[in-house]
Length: 71
Image (cartoon, rainbow, N blue to C red; front, side, top):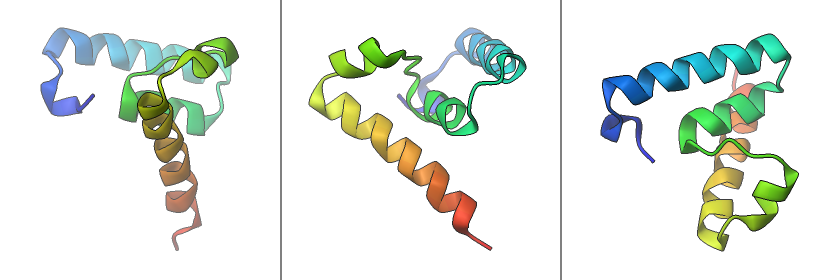
């Protein structure tokens, strides 16, 4: 899912979900992956992703950590 393809309403919903995740203390890499992919997952949901979707989600997590290592 790309942010460009989102409607203004879905962007608003995503902002609200992100705010709730932050308030709940969700780990930042999970929030980042949600923002990049649109996948809001628990452990079972992750296991049920298609291989392609799982690769997309994992890439977002890896991207987060790579950005954190940059000076």
